[in-house]
Image (tube, rainbow, N blue to C red; front, side, top):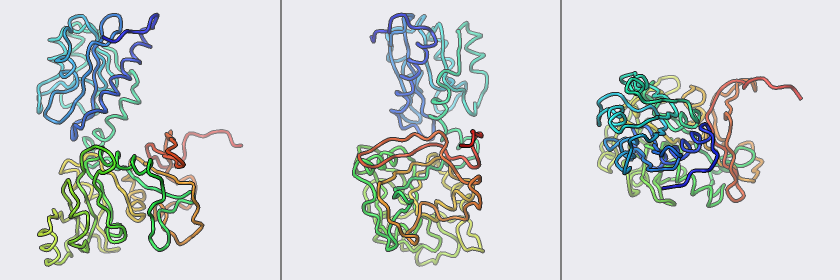
Length: 381
């Protein structure tokens, strides 16, 4: 049993234990369910057990922690998201929490779309003290992908790119190996492990022949997804032949029958989506909806620049994970991070809100939620 700090206020204790629950939540791979973590502590604030939701259909975080605890009567439960109050793949967690005899339950974030509301009221009616909103921002960030998918049926879209200081993804000849160092490339593979699917356009397949699987870290391969309106993907492409995961190709109605048959024989799963006429491109929102219907909740988009630009232009991107190398190409014809319509004014530019900046060797990793328009006004310098 872990010791608790002495002379700790209740607020400080709640924050400390919720931070542990957040760490526990990140261990699972529960998609299409949300990441949730739980910590059980005694009246002195010492940790008794931790739990997390490992996989859809397996025990939820609260039930996992309860199963690991020798005793729960009179203890406190910290959980990153409001306990479920409905029958799904598992029973209601509110019933398990009440049966465990907790004195107090501390919740980070409320369920973004409760199937059966009233979990907090149900716990209080059972005589349990309930507090919610502890480290709420961090807890909500844990389930941002789940919340968007529940609300819109679309995936949570993460734009990933490696660029030079002047924002270039490759040279004018298409050479991009390697913009960043090994540490940054390792983290990029960790992002793949956390995604349900990783998406590129046909231009990236033809130029780079990427594998799109997880190699530099231990993890689970995402579904490899290609936007390929007319099915130009070669049957020998690595997205088809690489180990791990399926390859899905989204195409339009104009794709030739012989190409459909050839790629299906090569192992591709073909998904036909709406095709626009002017210009003749796949309708991006319909493409994303097709993925969301197949439980792609978190989608990592690795480009190229026209795919990134289209997602930004249409307001379909949610987060950025950008690796910046201290190199300058100085070439206006080299492809940039995003090539869309853009904005005529800086006030209309997309921005990374409250960015987290980390150094990886000589490179920088900038990540955060994407927002359009100006942030709250600050004094002019």
